[in-house]
Length: 166
Image 1: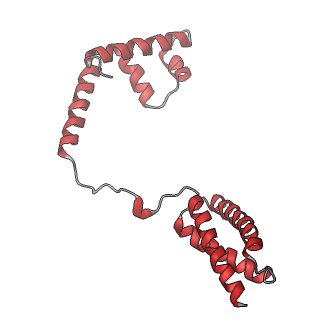
Image 2: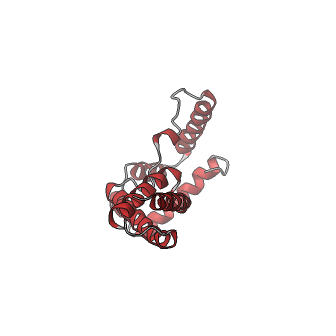
């Protein structure tokens, strides 16, 4: 490799790193730029002018980016967040939040206790994961509209018992 080719590849590499960094970030840009330079050295050694190398290297870089994207999608790592960037809970109990949660739970239990039997049964079935058709059959409603109406009224009642905060 001549000095002129080496100098041209160095300039092309810098420009390709800038091009790729604007699209995929600095870390990945360095790696892909190196791959582009290797392809240029192996397959296009006869070209030594920057004017000829630059458009060719940009095209190779685009192909390399697309290939990398396909590999990441297949591997399921596209858009993955690095472990270092994750915020992990420290595991300690936040007593203020625990107190607020407990108070809300107590208020909700008290409000449910004030409801009639049909509303309590409806909420129990919904908490068990039953859909409205199953609830209609279990509760003996004639139509789905009846179940929807019961649900709406029960939620209104519980909202009133909780002070309009549901």
